[in-house]
Length: 124
Image (cartoon, rainbow, N blue to C red; front, top):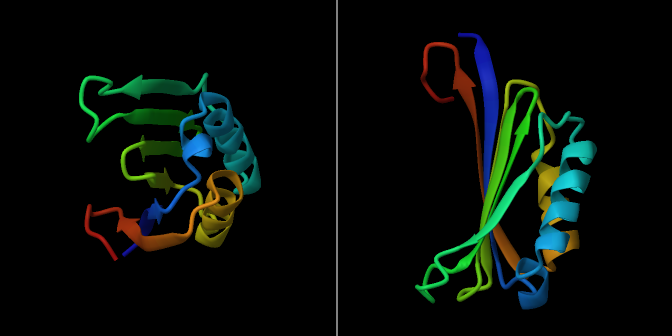
């Protein structure tokens, strides 16, 4: 079965609190990440600090459309964690995504799941 795209989910823990609370740092990370994995942006990034009324959920959400799909992330200020999702029809290096997270967010630990999305909608 033909592969449609690749999806990588990276949860990072023990992030530097200042780094995940900085919209400027998150935007720089996004630019660096997309360049590093060889993608092209499509339009401007979206970044917004959500759930300010709920300390359990407060944090920035980042979204960047790329020509071959998207990069999304949510940052939990309460837990100093982040949830990164990269999906693309063009192959990319998951290890480069991880390294960019380590560099920009100074996280202590991470967990990764990567899989291929097949043209029939199944996952490999």
